[in-house]
Length: 599
Ligand SMILES: Cc1ncc(C[n+]2csc(CCOP(=O)(O)OP(=O)(O)O)c2C)c(N)n1
Ligand SMILES: [Mg+2]
Image (cartoon, rainbow, N blue to C red; front, side, top):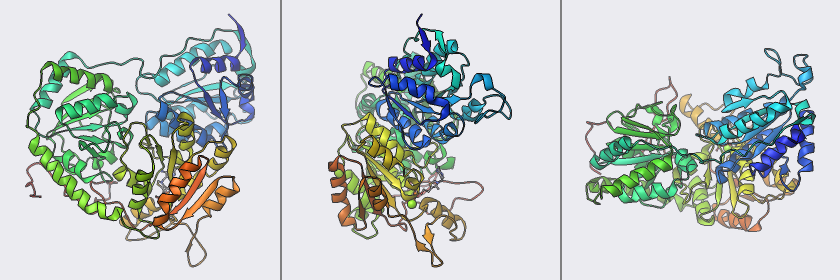
């Protein structure tokens, strides 16, 4: 057994697992680890952004693009406390990263040394981080590191992926012991469980009996890399597909079978199909409030009137909100392959049983197009939101990666962006952490250096992490930020206006007694950081500016002034109890038994 320092052991294990990057920020607690990374330069690269939040968003986005993990490194105390929010983002969207946090020396546990958290237990950082990771490990001797490392990596990548914490007391980095580097952990998707033969037979029976089937797919399909199987099954049986944001692109969204997202900020055809379906096959999707119209019957879904087949890798998600008629614990790709094989075995004819269903869907699609399309061609200043989405779609190639941030801009992209490939639209869906897009785009670009990577980020989101500009320059990461500048936290302002009689408070950015709209000059701010930038106030100029920024192949910021008074059309509901839902909805709530309106 070789004699090694703890920090060298950690470094060698990361390298053995083909981890190319550590996104880390220094502190006295982790200098031992930094020294080991210095010695391993050339085999593993340290990227050091200006805020721990950015490091963790970068690692999260890196995983979402490549399905291969990287690690973060933060110091004891405040530095590690800064990663709690982005870890919650990663956990709620099933994204893997190894968060290595430093702690105080074991010899000082409970003496209240500098930056120890100890009101209830010694070196208690794992208790802070525990709710936002799959597991936290805290080895306290070097000879405990091999097991902790192997278990941490395996836990992170097996089953439903997620962030894992390795909390390392200061002395472990420096102390030596006789230890072996443990074997590499199985890669993500190395083990794939399937449904039982009986479940597959029951599932295909239900599908073949249905007259109005839809599939609802989520991040589980993306994570299991089941795009080909999903597309084959949907096309073979002509089943329309509704996608949650992190499932978008698994079926090319320009395919007529793709109905888009569902819920308040979804597409009208998706909500119509969801609420009128007689069979819903949900795969790797979890019926959260935003994709289920806050579970109000008749807006997006109509369970239990519709039959539900729910497939997921995580038993906690099966039946969390709607008890399934058939709940199947399985990997998405394995399940879809099994269903395809059963369909082929039965030599299912391509009959016309669902013809009427498709005719209805065609009508809904046409109605939605007629309502929304004209606005995509309008030129205005400030710019109409639809125009920004449309020009991004026109300029960016199919393999470009769009890192979305949080807010109104995200609502527009969920409704109208049409990714054609999986893993090209990154969304902070479950937790909606502001800064995810502006910071994550840096990690996305490191994961896909040859593809354009564009963040669409609100003025509020961007001002939470403006130092991403420095990191792009320091490490020559050529990304584009489209700052959706509407001079406020407008998504929240709109909730305020709707709920509280039109009163706005603390949600718009202004200065002076006359409340003049205020924001920094984002383009000047970028230039001061060494990043090229343009301000775009007229819609005629946006497309050319974006083309120029992408072609420049260097860090580029576009400050785009977007109209704050044009709201995305609601096509489902989003309710915050006890407030009753009263927003006008494009399309009607429909409950079984209601008359079917003649289109
Ligand atoms: C870290 C964090 N703080 C607060 C919120 C609550 N929040 C959600 S959207 C939003 C406003 C976003 O503002 P901006 O980026 O300008 O986007 P806009 O809604 O104006 O398009 C806020 C404050 C959040 N999701 N994350
Ligand atoms: Mg804003």
